[in-house]
Length: 176
Image (tube, rainbow, N blue to C red; front, side, top):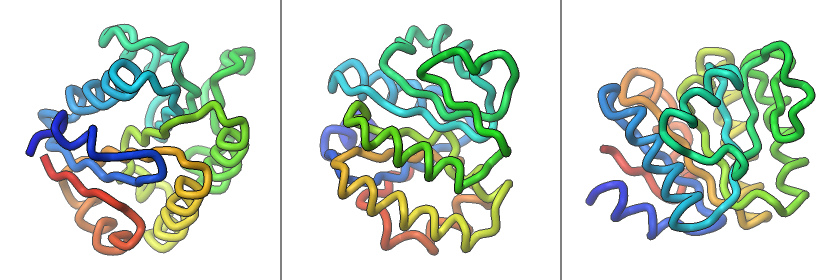
């Protein structure tokens, strides 16, 4: 089955991992975001450990994705602290910071889904067991707040290291 066939099967409270090949990565990301904000009319939280808000903004503009539908949790960058929907991390890749910000955003009730632009990037900044513990935290928070979680990961070494360790914390795994 394809991505657009599988996305409607995922529901609030579910945590889904989508594994994409490098060549399809950006297109897959755009399809997920367009579906969630367009077809589902959801408001989301976009998490990127590797990109600044300016880089994410350029990607959204190029794909025609509305930024007003998102909160952004992004790599540290200067000059964006005045934007109310942007949360630049103080420390690159900090799972503690991500956890605290996600918890606060979930409490507002204004987040229908959370999208991790590159879940395997968590391994660049953190040891494997820290990522496993974070995934367990995330899984339980998604369930308790009825927020849909989608994590895009690149098909490769990072995903092959992490997926076997977190299999009990995701509801769906789609390998494209």
